[in-house]
Length: 152
Image (cartoon, rainbow, N blue to C red; front, top):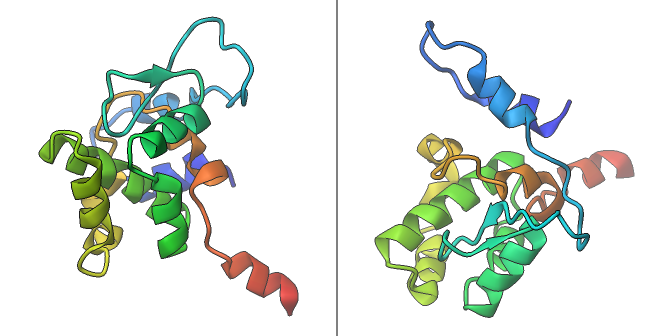
């Protein structure tokens, strides 16, 4: 099962929704690593979405250089796929709320037992065409439950 089908299964929209949402999720282009993306910067940084990058890895590196290490937060919480989606959207919301203050965003993400990890509101994208959500499986999932199953 692909990441987009996992995500779409979690979105229970109104009965009159058409399949446009599914098409949007499936249109995530593959992450090309460090390759040139033809000059198209498609992935917004978390702290400042006006800063755009060719890859999710580059966007996360920029955020880390500015004081918000999203990957470290994901590792701290040992997130599964849904936790990774919630993290991206919660971090984006908090960045707006705290005017891009990396310290405030990090503190909020690590505070209070990570209440955002259980809030389904953060399964909805905060920004349109969020390229960072396309990379959750590859960059922000640290749940080792599958490793435990393999060990048996």
